Length: 147
Image (cartoon, rainbow, N blue to C red; front, side, top):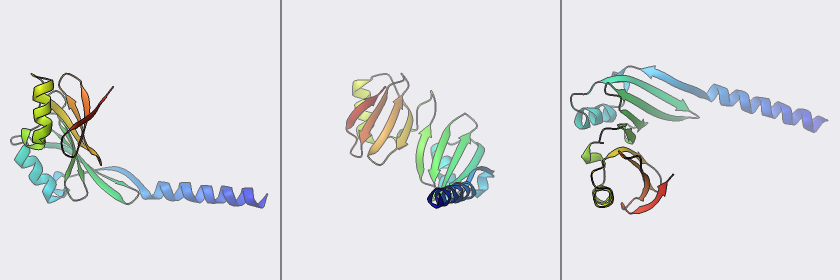
């Protein structure tokens, strides 16, 4: 019985600490974004304004999510480096797509464009304007397709 009570007490403490550490998403002014994130938006999305920004602090990890006035969503790490760019049905700026990935897309899916790119540990997840989703390694070689 003591073990069960001890287990339950530990479980309650764990859940309570997880709730306290999880601050969830907090809206912030665009001026509070890391300088690198602000510069990234200005350089890659000229003429677009930040409509909404939020800071996500989850278990001591900080991320930023930015929504531009055209609907584009950009995720940044704590230092302001981009992690994901989702332009929905509009092409991601060419400067963000590694050349090898762009060459593969042009050769395999002519007439389509990259509308979403997400950095992963192994490389990149990419979504095209025709709905195709692919995985690429860090060198830009296609390593698979998503359903």
